Amino acid sequence: MSISRRDFNKLLLSGVAGSAFGLFGMSSNSFAAGGSKKHVVVVGGGFGGAATAKYLRKLDPSLAVTLIEPKLAYITCPFSNWVIGGLKKMSDITHNFTVLRTKYGVNVIADRVVSIDAAKGTVRLGGGKTIGYDRLVVAPGIDFKYDAIPGYSQKIAESKIPHAWQAGPQTLLLQRQLHAMKNGGTVVICPPDNPFRCPPGPYERASLIAHYLKKNKPKSKIIILDAKEKFSKQGLFTKGWERLYPGMISWHSSTGGGKVLGLSASAMTLETDLGSVKGDVINIIPAQKAGKLAFDAGLTNDKGWCPVNPSSFESTLHKGVHVVGDACVAGAMPKSGFAASSQGKVAAAAIINLLHGKEPAPPSLVNTCYSLIGPEYGISVAGVYQFAANGIVEIPGSGGLTPADASDDQLQQEALFAEGWYTNISRDIWG
Amino acid sequence: MLLKKNVMLSLVFAAVPLLHAGSSAIAAEGTAPVPATAPVSAPVPAPVPAPDPEMVRQRGQILALSCSGCHGPEGKSTSIMPSIYGKTTGYIESALIDFKSGARTSTVMGRHAKGYTAEDIHLIAEYFGNLAKKNN
Image 1 (spheres, each protein chain N blue to C red):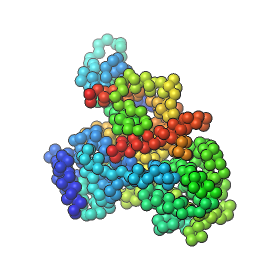
Image 2: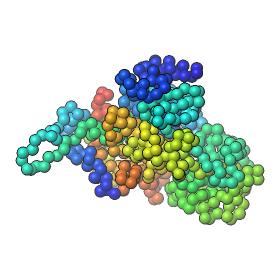
Image 3: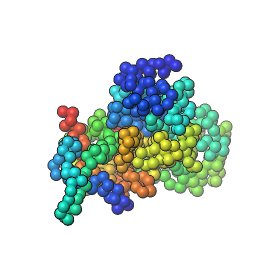
């Protein structure tokens, strides 16, 4: 209650008072009536949600925009590997919503959405409030299929074998375990099958753990037990590992002994087709599905992700509800922070048109992801996407990877650009 | 694939090259070109639909918004990434054309620029060129 009152006052102060009556009214209809401002509610303050909220207000200041996010600050998955490897601090990857509130006039509510009523156009918050909307944007991120590996569970993830695939306490748990490990220890990383958040992420993680181990515990090893036959930027990573960490990292494909059949958390062993693998530190990145709210709201398909109209990111299952980011099915686009923010901008522009009774314009989408193999060794993947008859496709001839024959200068430049990328994309979304 | 793209974009850009004759998208908003509904008595030339200035503006905007992911909001970088903000339309357009052709070397910009047509590049350049002008 006190949070709501405070938000209410801030709302009045931030100059969007016209929306306030509808905001805490019971339905969107009261909003649309009488020339009140149109109200868009965004759920989730990550790359997709925060970008949507910010760009809605930036592109159409006449809108009232409410962002609902239980956390007071968002900790990014991108660059959390840099924290694990000792190159960044948690504070470097933590972003609050102050600028969205004060500069962009987004009404930020620190609460959880417990249910969505798409027919009535309302969301209900954990604190008990019901908020009406003209359009809703849901950016719930990912959830984990813990049961994909027998013996693994959320409880074990939180206490002993972290996934560290949602940044925060999990990132620090994995980092502490690496710090506590003896020189000569074994780190086992288990990346999931597709599709999952940040396809190159597990391999950047192996790289930056190797960087830490080489400096501090050089007799140690990293074993990657992969649920896949191949992985993102594979040639570039493999070459980088041979050059920077020779003999330290071994990767096993799913059919080459990488498939994890079961876990014994007490013995710290993983069962594979080729026998038992023991780890001093084990990092299981479980198979994934859309965040829980997407399931609760009936926004998911039989594969556990949210189908959307690619020109507006409006759900094909619930009218008036848009889904952006990792949770949505975005054709050729990978599940990445950059992709989520690109989708958020497209969704914002489409929503503005829809609220004015116009069709969304054809979208243009981009992904740009950097991975760090060593502090002076960066690689990237880029993609430019458009809407075609069969959904979102990559524009032929565009995008692609750092060339296999990139010079050391180029790799060093890409490492510098990786850091520059993070600075700017963070400001583009939360700054 | 290219065919599909051209078909789709032609809906929006049937007459975008008109804009290239020196007039900016913003200028076009104020001075709408010949209306498409003008009566045509002669059999040739075939009537060219006028570009909807609002659609052209939106197209430039959605293309340009992708840039800020790496180059910072409004193209204003505070990192090693070069700023786009403050550069002229002509400079940005020729830079992107050169990135696309490979005449200008880059790490990742060439890969991006290959995703855009000459019209796209012009609209991106115009968006940032006008942004700087507007704020000065």
